[in-house]
Image (cartoon, rainbow, N blue to C red; front, side, top):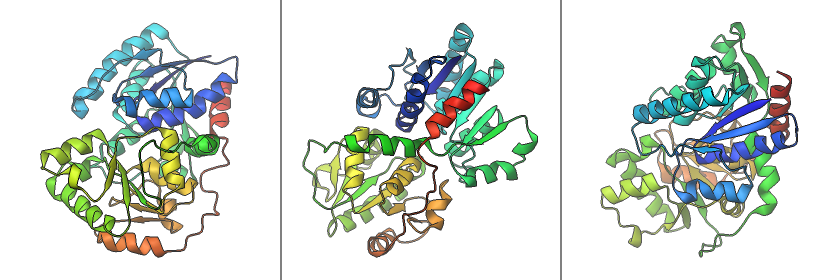
Length: 353
């Protein structure tokens, strides 16, 4: 069986590492990896392949730095031609990026069976490009690998039981990754505080307007005066801060370059709290039993909010929410994301499809 995997962004590299490892254990599966190049910074891309022993991409399209429409369109054109030449039995896509949608559309229009890992997630915010990507990808997929019961319920409410689609509860591949790679955690080579809040910010709604960006960073500066904050700075966020004249050199925040996955695991393991607008990091915080404050109005991972270990900022004061979460007692005993065998379930399902 020939499977084409399409990836392009950091979270997808982590997820692909899990499933690719399961593929390698099956002599009947040949995986061909297409990297769109959506994340092109070495610290956001190449380091993950090196650290995690992900098979090197057979094709790197190096498509990046464009608007959503141009990015998706160019990816679609080039992926389509590759799929015609490769003629795979399945196309496998992950998550909710422009790479995901482009790969899904290319497969669907060529009538190549399509599988979507991390299907059924919904933020119910159609202003998010990711929400559009995941909904459209789900609708044209043949197999939907859902990480949670909530994801399955979302699909059922949208009528997916009446479509020619196979809905599988696989568990979460990110949980597989956390279990497998945790022993390989590496301390960053730069100095970091002994006790700190780990923070990441990259989402469009948080960095594209001066008002939102300033609100978040004013709060971070205030919090950092009493509790250190370590912030691996996304290239897009850095650019936006420079555009508004933010002085990175005089910040109270411990701003560092983006880190590899093993270094991020270390930062998670030793943090007091996580602040993020990333979907993946919300879950990773839970995997490592860390409370989380999500700098968004909504989340796809509602079970984290329901169990009390994640707090959405919404319209609340960031500083107050962070202080409350630092002092809150949380139960991390619930098994929300499967049993750590999602990769094996995905590989076995595709092999028997």
